[in-house]
Image (cartoon, rainbow, N blue to C red):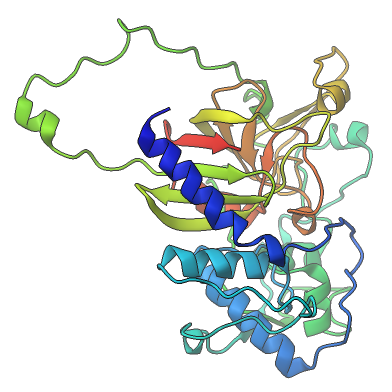
Length: 371
């Protein structure tokens, strides 16, 4: 490993270590997480303002929920460090939902915090039946949103319970033309992920069934440039990715500059994410997924599997970033509420809106370090 990379890893380690006092206990639940004392609407609005600011800056807090939660504090600390600031650690007796330090942040740029959105027919086109059984899911042409609220919540990077809080009594029967109050983020437009409609890539290889990319021999590697002046010119920097498996955070670097951060879910003890240095091999939009329970739980491939169709509620979400290790990738998710609070089956999982933004930054051959 070069001295530069050693320094880079050390610096990243220090960057995440500063977050240690802010990391609380993690648990995954589809129910509302305990909040402690109930916030006032004004407090919730200010917490959302910070979350939107970070989301717009590509230092994602994950799902927006109107609270100064764990990932909001992590994203804020990393945002400050990317600008050469030293984030303040919260006092030892600080409550989990204590107001974050927002000094010197241009939060006035987030105005209004909430907007009124009129539901369109297109919003409901990707809503459909989603059976719990994998066997039944494999029979479908696409794995769509469970209901309109599920679709609207994802479109606005929003916790579905928070959407319900913002729109009491309105989220159970959403129809075109309904007016909903939503966070003022750049919407995640599922139709822009790819021109192809969900289900149209049924004959494409499963994302997690692609072969490893073999290492090139010296003869296969491109020859160095013959022009000395061209060799001395600085090539454009290829963005790199570093994933901290303890902090559940993925960081994107351009050279040595931290430019984006996203919360992630990483592998379990049985199917751990592969520690080491990898490269982006390819990207697949609307991927199919080979659901092999033995492989997912024990890392052993079997002949009993289901081929799941693509869609926003596929286990790998709307996009798969394949690494040069078979079956391992960075991908979206069917359950954005689980990001950072559960485990995956060896891969690295992001919210769909975050994995699409990540794909816009990285390239094939970008390095991916998992540590």
